[in-house]
Amino acid sequence: MYPWSKKGKKVDGEQEGKRGKRENLVAGRRKKEKDLIAPIIFQGTLNAVGFKHWLNKHLLPSLKNPNVLIMNNAPIHRKNLIRELGEAGVINYYFCQNTLLI
Image (cartoon, rainbow, N blue to C red; front, side, top):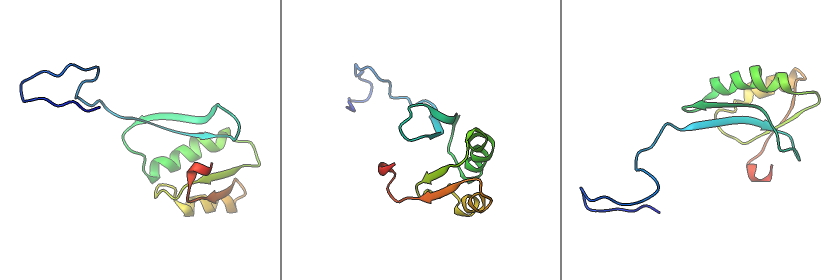
């Protein structure tokens, strides 16, 4: 609910109109397990460089082979990087259109 009032009049509510800094979470997850794999929390946006860093430094070292990596088609999921890892035998990968199915 978004209340409004005339300028200078107070609106009683539980939330302030000020926004804080957003925190984002990137993590892996195994099917049928509740625990997240290699979670990191950060402020700002995640770009392809940040995703590559998380993948190489956090996620991959915590995985045991064999693995299947399923991702959506977000621009940060650089297909060339993922294909290189697949060709090196590090992971099997799949890009899906609808991540609601994951």
